Image (cartoon, rainbow, N blue to C red; front, side, top):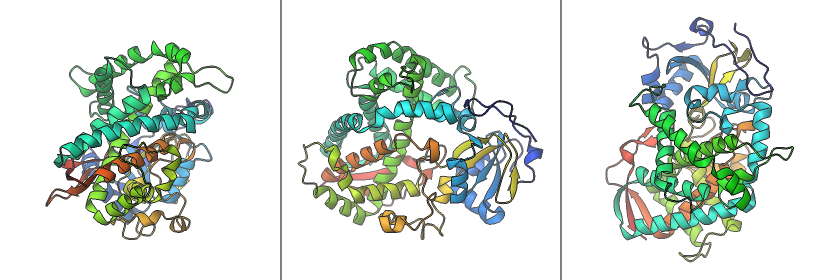
Length: 459
């Protein structure tokens, strides 16, 4: 068995990957020669792991994208991998194959003490004061876009419209409204970087998405780095300016490189995962008009005029809206699998797993376990009523991860979802196009096939 070859507390540990023979005792189907299970998993990851669990149990070996990964299934597995009391797992080494070239030093690419220090420094950007400023930008941007939809109702392909909106909102709230004439090139660089992170060709050969992603990163580093010192002097309410003010425990500013890397990562996370989550949310409301009406009534109960901003202090009043958004995240989690790499040998469910193994927790599987979620394919926000939640396993719902790596922007996501629902439902009714039923390409970040075909009608 392979062994740990660097100290763990620094967060820069490395391990030797075990060969397939070292994992042969783990139950699973090796799949086809060369491609393994890749095509099968991509086609239907929910069905694949449900069938795997029925056949093999809660530990399933999968040959995927050129490596053997061991998926640990269920809430107990989520607790082991995500809570990680024993510091058994590296997030950096787990996500590294996908992120190293494009987002090499984002918060998700740090471990243990290094991660804790950076997370604490960055948390200042998500306190109440900055969040109020972000909400003001979100509110204005969403209101303006919904007004455009209201002026031109009818059939729409919703996912690309939402993708453009979340990108615009991220640029406004995270970079400030006055980033200048390079706005479009900055947005395009982010789009190229996100696409490169999941591109099948992992080297930046000419003409490949990875090459475009690497160039996008170079463009953003060149754009952001000179602004760090400027924003430290002038301040600002946007996320970039807040990150420029972040300090370590000894009072020192984060380095310019660190600020730029965190900025790149936060933009990616806010753009792609929120596009997925809000698209799912809109579909669930369109497909469940009774819940659309219940949320509309709750929003009307705020008593806000259409042109009146949503006050930060009143977000907690939208309880049903939050429950409905959580249920959408349960059914289609924005990150269906959460990657780690084992730093030491460990055991789970009676199986010995060697150091160096690629390990995944699987929110998509857990979120559809019928023993945790009766009728799991039915949209039912009442699952998140306080009394119901208290009786459920603590690690049954993990759309934002958990433990030390719990998503730092989860409250930002809830805030944006409530703001979006308020403006959408106060102005429009959304319905599926006649005869259309949504299906989802789940990996790496879910998006609807055919772009999600909805019809918008003025309220």
